[in-house]
Amino acid sequence: MIILSFLLNFTAISVHLFLINMSTMARKKKSSEKKSPGKAVSTKGSKLDDISKLSNKELKERARKFSKQYCVGDGGDFQLKKYSTDPNIDLGPEDKPLMKLTLETGVEALAELQDKMYAQDKWSLLVIFQAMDAAGKDGAIKHVMSGINPQGCQVTSFKAPSAEELDHDYLWRCQKNMPERGRIGIFNRSYYEDVLVVRVHESILHASKLPEELVTPDIWKNRFKDIRNYEKHLSRNGTRIIKFFLNVSKKEQKKRFIERIDNPDKNWKFSSADAKERNYWDDYMKSYEEMIRNTSTRESPWYVVPADNKSYARIVIVSAIVNAMDKLNLEYPVVSKEKIAELKTIKQALLDEK
Ligand code: AMP
Ligand code: MG
Image (spheres, rainbow, N blue to C red):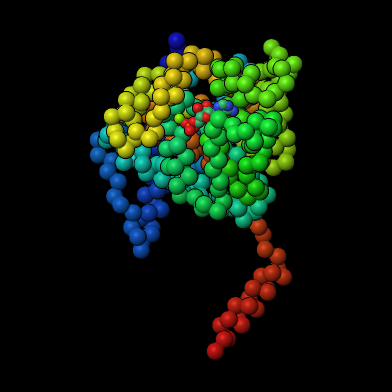
């Protein structure tokens, strides 16, 4: 109990500081842009006061510390019950402007890192999203990736496998969509479905074309091992992987389902299959827990993101991605002296043009 309350306080303090500092950065930057001054941000009534000024470096350090509390790292003794579905901080409407500005600042930092990664053309980043329905995967992808160059980013959604996909092993369709060097690849669901939905509904496994003698009681343990090795292989070849489980509560899912039913513009997002899957909630949670325990590693960690508050979840995600990219020490390629001399000559020739 003491440990838990310490964690909760720590979370509250961290978000507090993170929000304050991220916002300060944004305002500093915006006020220096003379051509398009940033809109004033109302901090009135917000508990997220402006207390200090951060450099770009400090901002990244803050992102590291903030996201770390949701990073599972080595999954060995992972227990889902230790991770909250809500942020444990009382965020009200008065905090919205600062939350929005914080996300924008994070996206700006992410865009800068992506630009370098693209120019450098060596590393790639794979970001995996897994969650129950209505946990906010689509919205998170839309908002977090909104400010980045589309050329350097590719999103792939994985649904129930097609006949062609079932004709191959379950990693095949994912391998085909791995990000190229210099790019960010986003997987909206992934090969992890093959230890989640396929585990919860073993009938899917039996209906697949896998030879029956390979469907043994060890199948899940073996799949975890294969996934760990696969991710190790990708890491060793220049793909950084981070994985987000958007941890929404059953209560919040119910609320969002009802919203989707009540709002005609959201009807398309809801299917009766979603309501059916909800009946298997406990089986899913058990499968998620085992999956994270067996596949979270220091180099390719899972983040368990409190997803009952969408704005908060997006800030966690952007800070974790900024941190992962920052660790790659990305730099623009250094141009040789010869190349600089050549550029100068070309510039002079352009200036001399009549
Ligand atoms: P959505 O992401 O809401 O559009 O839904 C996609 C659906 O495809 C989800 O219900 C997933 O569980 C399902 N799905 C994804 N991968 C697999 C798979 N390998 N086997 C069976 N169902 C899958
Ligand atoms: Mg769905």
